[in-house]
Length: 111
Length: 121
Image 1 (cartoon, rainbow over the protein chains, first blue to last red):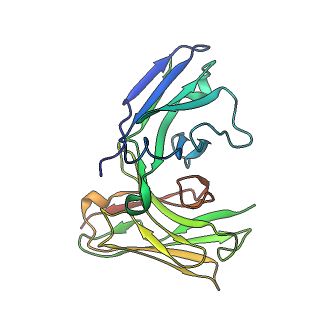
Image 2: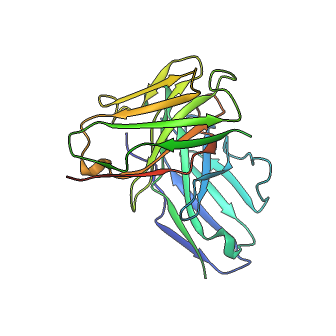
């Protein structure tokens, strides 16, 4: 099973909005509303910022929002800030044989 | 506040078996129905789920690693473990232990700080 597909990099200016896509298949992203998103800064552990497609854990900024259409999930960061510069990974449940798939990661740069 | 801490060798020779431990503090690994997980981050590449062990003992592994992976737990020590056999350079990565609190559906809310493992002779 291949990893989920994410763009390698996305950039934006402070205050702008950016969107990161995460493309899977009808066997993973398309079958389950179980997509999560992780933010990772250098030297730190990943942090969950979205789970079950659209839900934000307590304490995560509402500038992070997400959605899903068909086999593609998307993460939007609005009001881009310098602290949002990080790597972002999507993850999808893929059934009881494969279990979990991750995307290759997207590096977000704040210009 | 549950915390996780990985421990183990930073350098492993090719063909050897990697053994890592994850110590859990601030909570019990045998309660709550959590999935105690191992993941890794390859240099310059993405995250990879290795597998997890359910609080009640069942294990689930990434199919691509299943033949080489064993995850176990010691409830008396509040630890869980990873063994990965036949290590190669492709296994060089930062290894993380983490808790999946949503029935093993990929919601990892608590992570260890990660430990770098290099495979080299």
